[in-house]
Image (tube, rainbow, N blue to C red; front, side, top):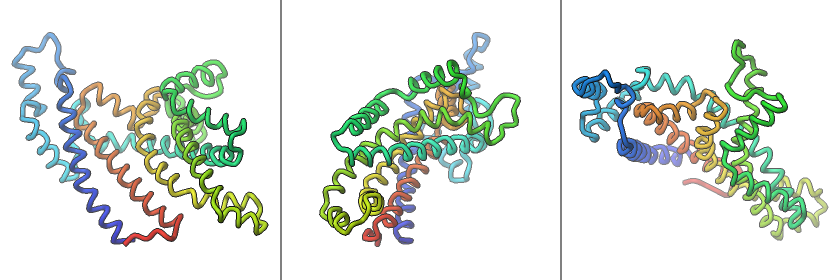
Length: 316
């Protein structure tokens, strides 16, 4: 197992290099430049040229990339072109709220999807199954921003049960309950996509498992249905579900950008949107490489969990 982990970490290095290379050149292909945010009618052509030179935008793209890569090897992601703050500091201030939001959304999504998928498989072709399938398709199809706006209108404006946005009440120190109260709406909305997708896979996996011979044998031994489903069926059906959960990390990170903007949650998603609008290339690159690291880590953890769930899986 240790050798396998080391090999995966070594493979991750060229993958990260490829991610930075592709992202950098895609960013450079976008129209405009960061200097456009500072241009005003009062600036002369000479002042604009000096501004671009100070920001390093007059260098060839390949030279800009290698300068950025050299800073990366020194543990420095550069400085924001908008605020002149270190990119590491900006990301560090925003990463915990995003992890809190996406982690909560993943847990809520699984708490919804696992029992719903299992019940849907057991009650196959009944009204319960049809309702579960309908929920899955609706949750997967409706855009996150629309669900967020509807949730704000109903629960914040009409019912006045939950706050409409932010991470804490203005003028409040931000105690645990205040933060949780602000977290409920964005976490639930963000979890719907994951819950919808995982529910369908849990249902499909459980239907296949429930038809196996060893399930009939377990029932013939007189085991209660709860233990048959929980101990035998669910555990054997977890492999494809784990794969999907690992892939859902990327979906949650992408969905967080929209959800955080709708609910004004001060995380990396909101910072990403702001950096794109202001063409803050160093911040965009920093967030991109962090997202790549998270995805690679999620895939590695998923592979390790395979061997925990199914001892027959060995890594040489």
